[in-house]
Length: 497
Figure 1: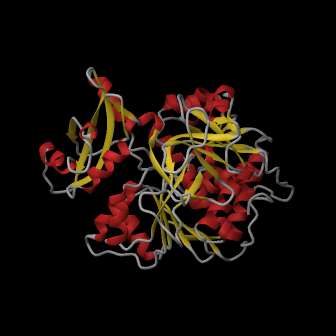
Figure 2 (figure 1 turned 180 degrees about the horizontal axis):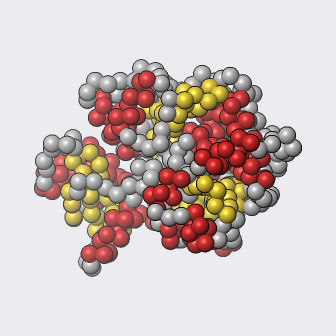
Figure 3 (figure 1 turned 90 degrees about the horizontal axis):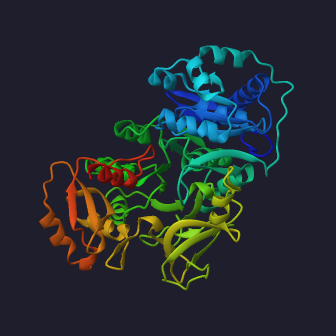
C-alpha cells in the first residue's frame, strides 16, 4: 500500500475507505497513493523535504500523506483551527518547501494561491480539479519507494510537556510499531469497520483510525467532522464495529442512549485524547451498553502507550496496562522509581517514542532524559501494573501547601446528575497561594446553583479541595479533537483582570 515500510497483505478488492457514499478498495487506494507520490516527485519533492498538509478528513489526506512519505519527504499535518500567524510559525519553523492544501480551506481564509505562496515562501499544491487532472495523467512506472524505517516520516506540532509549540519528530518505525502495538492491544480484526471522525491531522486519529485499520486489512468510514446526528446515523448504517473518540463525544452518545438508540454491531469503543471521567465511563457501559475502554498516549509516543484491556480485567478510572513493547514507570523528581500507589511522573520507553524535537536540542534532552520520555503527567501504578493518571503536572493546584488534582475534583462533579461537563483550574489566592475554580455546563433543561453543588461535594472531598469559585457556563472551549482547553479558560481569566 505505502511501500515496504507500510506494507499490507490486503491489496485488491477489499474495501479500504468509505467516504460520502463512495467506496475505495485497497487496490484503488494504492494506485492513488502511487499517483500522488509520482506527481510530487515530478514537481520536485526530494528526500528530507518537509511538506505541510492542510486538509479536511478525506481520502485525499491519506493519499497526500503516504504519497509524501513514499518519496522520503517529511509530512507536517496542520491543525485546521490554527490562525495564519500560527501557520506561518509552523511553516517557517519546519523549514517546509511545499504545502498541500484542500481548496475549501483556501476559500474559507479568503486568500489566493499566490498570496499564500508569497506569505509562506512555499510551493502551494491545491487539491483542486487541475491537480486531480494532472495526477490522473502522471506516469507511475519509474516511481521508487524510499524505505528507511529509521528515517523521519512526520513532524507533529505539540506544546509537549513544556512551553512553545515544537515539532515532535516521528520516524516510520515509531508509527508502524505503534500501529502493531495497538493491533495486539485491541485485538484488531480484518473484518472490522472503523469510524474516523477524529481529525486526521491529530496523531490519535492517524495511528488509531488510519494506520491501525489499514495494517489490519479493515475498512475505514471517514467523516469530515463530529456532527452528532451524522455520527449516530453512520454508526448504524455502516454497522461500525470500532469507534475511536474523545470523552466529549461519549457525552453526546449518552444523549442518544436516552432516546433508546443503541449500536449492536459496535464491539469496541475507545476513549483517548483526554481523561475519561469515571461517571461517563459507567454510564456508557450501563446505559449505552458500550464496550468502552480508555487508552492513554501523547504525541511524542506516536501516540498510544496503554489501554484498559478490552478482554480481561478492566479497572475503573485506569488507563490500563502498557502496550506490548512499551515500558512505563512512575518516578520522583530525582528519577527514582516509586513503589505502587505512590504518585509521581509517568515515564515511558519503547520503539514508539519520538526521535526528539526538531531544532530543539535542550527541550529534547529534558524530555527524553536517560532514554525515558518524561510525559509531564502525574500518575500512580497499582500492584498489578495498572496505571492511573492523577493529573497533568502543570495543572496541579497547591492550596495552602496541599496538592489538589483537578481531575479528582472533576470526577466528583461529574457524579452530580445535573452536570454535563466540568473543568477545574487553579486561581491565584493571596492567602492560600491558590484556590480551586470550577466551570460547569449543565445538562439541557437542568437548573442548579453553587450551594446545591457544594452540598453534594462536601461529603466526597476534603474542604481544601472544594471549589471556592463556581461558574456555570453554556459551553467549554475545546480543541479540534473535542478536548477541553483549560489554557483558554486561564487566558480568559487573565484578560478579565
